[in-house]
Image (cartoon, one colour):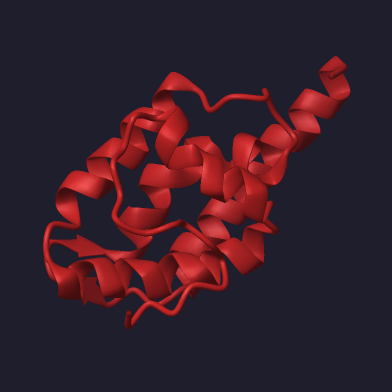
Length: 121
């Protein structure tokens, strides 16, 4: 990426991150709010949208691992799932990248991450 493209991309990430934090459901999801869940995954946006490196950054994996630890009950996972489904549409994430994230960040899940997942199952 050229310098101008990097600056434009970072600006887009910041704007989308702020928009997501302020416009998505801000209700408390037990120990974590929807906006907190999104903020933890903002470093993953370049990877998840296919605009960054072919592997997630260290800060992306740390955020994903932190979110996984905080979402420690079935209900919290369902709430976070619904929150992130909405965010994935706003950010335009690549579903193949979403499915790769847990393995690349060494996170064990009993389900596949998919923007079309039924969060109640």
